[in-house]
Image 1 (tube, rainbow, N blue to C red):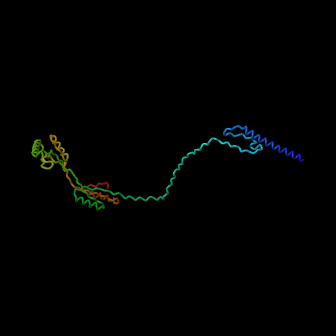
Image 2 (image 1 turned 30 degrees about the vertical axis):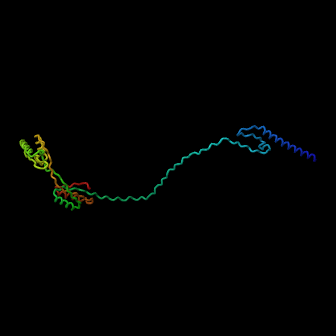
Length: 260
């Protein structure tokens, strides 16, 4: 029995030795016959070499890519435009509009005149003031025609003017007079007429005789009085009384004017 047991032990030892030698020979043959692989290629691994055949598992090689990843360019984003938000003004309490002041009635203004007589003007001032009217008296120089003069221009001397008068008298011209002084010295007056029509007829008569006669209007300068009156807006009812008062002065006239 001991002999049989020892024989079995020897057989087992021989078997395990044989198996170990076979595996070492297989690995050596694979390593010797494996060709050189290009860069990036994955070598073939037997299943048993991966641990499926009872051997120790070898780590699987990881293939590295030679391509560099393209850098990611960050997209430029435009800043968002935010519309300004306007704050509404605070609501103020609405006050009712102030009442408008009532307009007073406008004053009425008049001019009364002219008065050539100063005493008569003073009477009119007193009469208008008695009605409660504001009165201002003013003086103006007034030129009024007093006549129309027809004459011949001045001669070089008194003797020359006298000879010309003699010639005119022979032509049936009368009412001749030689001016002795002033700006018209040695001029021959052919007449001073009150109406313009009479003076123009005389001028035409002399011009038909071939003479260069002249025509001139004579003026009278006089001082006249005028009354400027203002009736307040609250007293316009007295305008009728003012009109009645003005009718008592026949030489003057009452006219309404624009208030200053």
